[in-house]
Amino acid sequence: MKTKLISISLALTMLVTSGCGLIGSLVGGGGGTQTAALWADVPAMEGMKQDNIELPLPIKLAVQALVKASGSSEGVRVDNFEIITFTSAKTPEDVKAFYTNERMQSAGWNMPDQPGCAGMSDSPSAGATFCLFGKQNPTNKSFLVLAAMRNENDTAMNLFFLRFDGDVTATPAGS
Image (cartoon, rainbow, N blue to C red):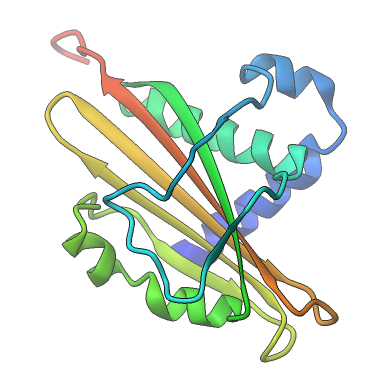
């Protein structure tokens, strides 16, 4: 239920923010640094080929706003936003099956309240999977968002990995 709620919230946020320049200025312009390689603490699914696919701005803004809002409510100052993109002949369901909570926990993604992956599919070869994972230590928190999308007529699936890192800020006593 929690994963469906997050997926619905993400979809609603994307709809609301599409075409809204004000949102971009509020969350820092929707930037993000394209990273050269998948991070060492993120397992690579077999068959992924790095590509330079531009993440649609409404999705980038929605995800960035959600992560910043989540981080600020937990006392985290998000100061690093990186993106890496891939294509694959596999399906969004394959992504959901690979990026399990257990696999990600063994890679260090240790926040217990993160929902993992949720999929939406119209057919066996098309659809989307969205994943959310987090990790923390006493001074830093990181959030990883993975979006895998494939249309019925496409031969390749697009995979977007977005990573947000931030410092844990001190909370005043009694808060």
